[in-house]
Length: 198
Image (cartoon, rainbow, N blue to C red; front, side):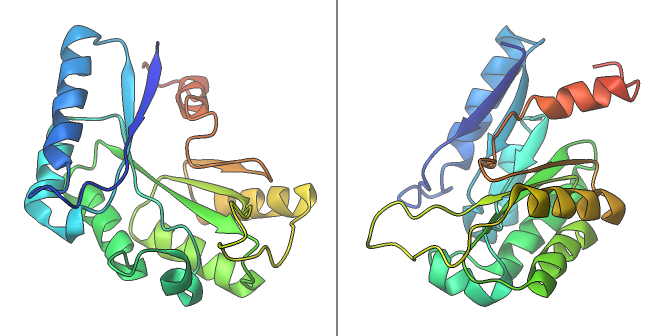
C-alpha cells in the first residue's frame, strides 16, 4: 500500500479521545512501512491542543477533520459537542503549528444549504489554511435521519470544484459520490504531477 487512510469512531470514552491510538498507529506504519503515506480522518479531540499535538507529532501525511455541513445546519447534522468553529479552530491549529502536514475537510451537500452558504463554508476552510476540500451528495442513511432536500447535478459539483480551485485549495474532489476519503491517494498523484518528489 502506498497510501493509507486511518479513521475510527469518536473515542470520547478515553481521556485523550483516542489521540494516542491514532498516533501509535501512524508511528508504527511510518517505522515499518516508510514508503506508505498515512492520512488520518480524525475527531476533534474536544479541541484540546495537547491531544492534537499527540496526533500531529506522529507525523501523518494528511490530517482530515470534516466540517460536514454549513454553519446553519451544524447542530442539526453533527453531535452537539462538535462545532463549526471548533472544527475550523482545530484545522487552523494544525496548519499553524505543523505547516508541513496537509489539512483536509469535507462538506455534504443536499441538506438545504444555499449557494452562498456553500461558498462561505469553503472560504472559512480556506481562511484557516485548509489544503484539501471534498464535496459530495448527502444521502439519507435511514428514515430516522434528515431527509435529502436537494440532489445536486454533476455539473454543479464541477462548478464548485472550479470555485474551490479559484479560492486557492491545493486539491479538490467534488461529485455526487465523493466522500471524505474518496480516491484520497489522488492527492499524491496531483503533487507528483506538479513536480513534488514524494
